[in-house]
Image 1 (cartoon, rainbow, N blue to C red):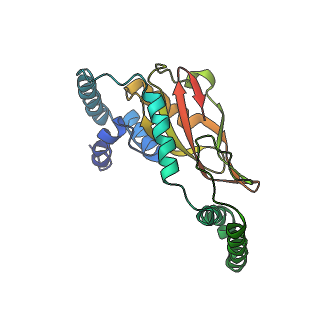
Image 2 (image 1 turned 45 degrees about the vertical axis):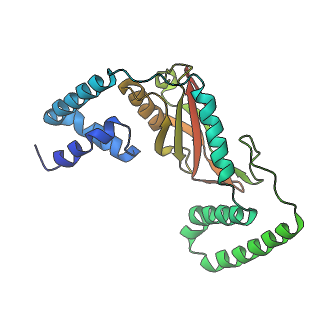
Length: 230
């Protein structure tokens, strides 16, 4: 066992639970391909996980998918921000991904002042916004990432039971590739986790856009059967 084995083995539990980012996932997978001792210990971890999964658990509610979507909608409504906060957040995203690398701090300050004045004018002229719904239309000039295809084709499909959908939050960079993701709910068996990991590595998205410029963004993916809904 060399020096790299210890930190790799310490991450086995998180790796099995899918609680690692994309870079850590690739590092652990590559190490297991070259280290027989770690591969043997990892097999023991997987065997223990299968034994734990065999323990009978309480059945999930039949309407879990509906309740989850309702809960997400309520959470979004509870966290509703003011129009001014929304403009400030969007501006920070645009600044961090587009303007800051070019060192135009003076121009940033000027545009920020103009945006703030414009926002205050809107707040004085526009009535209170209606309650947020799950299917609200995005603000003009902004668009979220959209799943396009997988470079692996149908080999990357994830098969889950229709009554137990897999809900995943993926973080997509400006090039349309996933650099991190998090499983919100759904099955956690080894096969599904392996297929999901491959799907995230090979999935291609249309990136989020701010006034026509590609930026980083987040997208909520639902896997039901072998379909992907973004």
